[in-house]
Length: 179
Image (tube, rainbow, N blue to C red; front, side):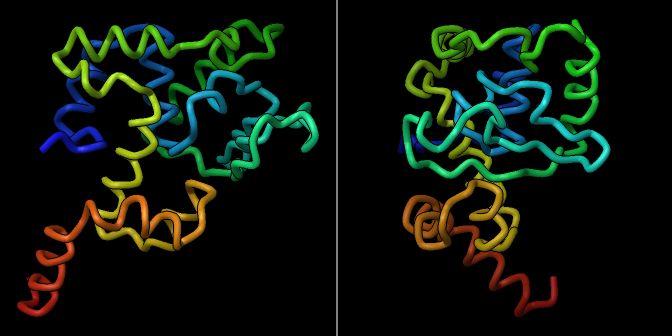
């Protein structure tokens, strides 16, 4: 079965092979659960280090300018990416872009995935699907996953819930046996 998400091992393999801005992109996409363009177009003004959160909606973008109706929530800065985000905030203070520019990283991501033997998983959106699936597998509430993604519970259940039946079975057995 070719899962529509990366296993933790596959994500780690891709991350180990990535360098520079592409590595930063992978980390931030995965740990925020954000869509690719939200991260590519993220400005430093969207990052609030003091409060430990990122507003995935650009303050410069009005509702009329948005190309889609996809929600862009305010998400916490995961401790695993905080050092990366802090470093990016300090680099080139005159540059407004968190990743140095708003460049499209689709091709670079696709090439990276090909180089690590995962050509069939070369779309950066897989990072969002992977994060949601991994959180659900870890037992995170579907409500919390929906909030992180800016999706409804129904959407998370429909899109990701069917990825988790084996994990759900294990969780139920563990709780019944007190493990």
